Length: 189
Length: 239
Image (cartoon, rainbow over all chains, first blue to last red):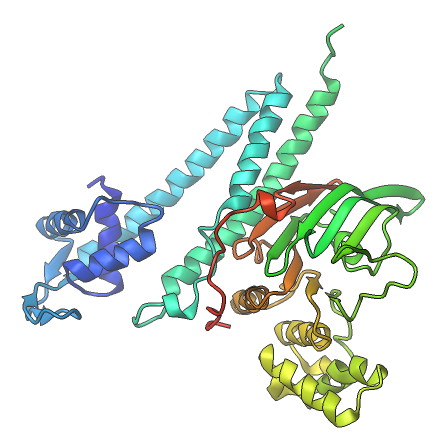
């Protein structure tokens, strides 16, 4: 299963057993900025894929949703296999993230003979990090009613902040390397 | 015209026998209602930048303006009135009571003691530490001490608040609350300038800047910042 949407929906079901519409609203609020999907139909397709693979299962007794409709809705919960596979996928994402970061650092290093170009890239990279608002702290009014209010938001905010500070430190290191190279570069006569 | 403005500021420091240029042609503007965070590595000059911005230290070159007035001109005294400044760790180990610490500045200006007490109490309530009124400063943890330091500045009703590393040494789970407090003060119309070494203040700031080798980088004036505010005014329920 390659779709990040499917895995993300699985995570939401693990967080709290639920039904399609509620999962869609939670998906939009938590992941809408980083994993945009066209509409709620993607969530239903993800639920079907997860169910067919045995990663989620329907609760025995359908419940009424939180909305105005009183029609019973199929509620899903994660299976033990779903939880285990989700943990493996999350770890794989971390490895992929690290791989991409290393790729960027090494590809930038290829510009040793063109330090001005590298410095321009670093300047734009730094500004993008400074402008990034993805890791802002959620307010209490943004917390949904759930067992651990806003935990996902707070973890994301704290992670984003620490990564941002570390990345700005790395940018400063890289900048000094390229500034040193630029000062040694022979000037055209 | 911005409320706080640094124009082509230079500042030197003696490090041993060497003279280091800590701020090099730094220009910065902060508007009322803005939260601006300056990130930098250790010894990047971020504390110097804030001390100069607050008028605590004069620049060696350039000018610092508060509401268009030169902060360092003869006869101008804005620190404690128009500009509130919180240095790192000031008074943390003191045996002085929290409430006395906050009202000391008011009493020094001749305010009647009961009025000063009431105002200090109200400000401590605003920053969420009124229950520590009777404790000694030395009994507070880092997060509580920062809140009291903010209260000491706020009690004079500043229009600009300059805070040096408000989350330094603060418990990880308390950092967000400090930043949200600063965000709420900005939402009330105060211009807030903070320095930051751990990234805590960057994401909730209207503008985040970096300082390295004396050079300030990023969107240094409000016109260069984002158009939309992060959060509408009054939405500070998490503080």
